[in-house]
Length: 242
Image 1 (cartoon, rainbow, N blue to C red):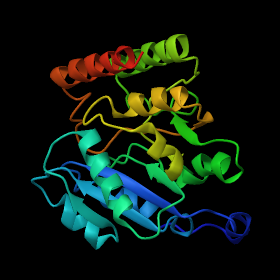
Image 2: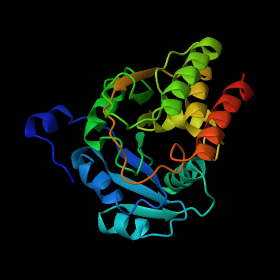
Image 3: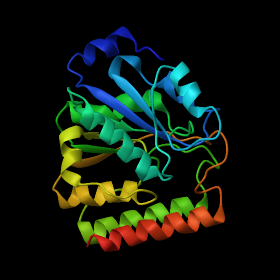
Image 4: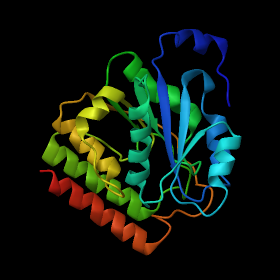
């Protein structure tokens, strides 16, 4: 795992207890890249939820130092909820949870940027915005970009909370997360978190993050069916909670 320069380490002396949740499905080629780039000084534990992979994702994640859980019910939200159940079982709870994808499209080394507003008590939920940051050409499809813009417009219009992205790279206070009552088990997870944060009066902010082409093919944006289902579920979730 990547180590921080000593001046950055000293500036993070008051860092809270941070746990990272990474849902993963058939990501054996990328998972160790993700784990190795997570700043070791910031994180107590990384939990990889193997969402029914038929490759060596779980084995690779263990070899690279992660706690591995198995969730056979397919779905991004199902995997995240499995991780949250694990945290609830711990005697000592974390202060902050970071959610991160397993495909190496996010830049884990930028985690300090997400944690900073929480550490400085300026936010309860921080979204890593690819719209505000830099995207490698081809890292997001046109439906992804346009769908994000439509969804965030609707969040602003109906829930009075301005976002620019539904990015998966995000950090939230553990106690704040518990207030949300998250239930979505697949494509609506990210937008459900953001709209419920707005409804519950959480302090929300965004920070720019970098984004690159993922390793391997996306299970969602990589197929027409996945793109349509994800778009439908996101819009359905926004209107369902009005």
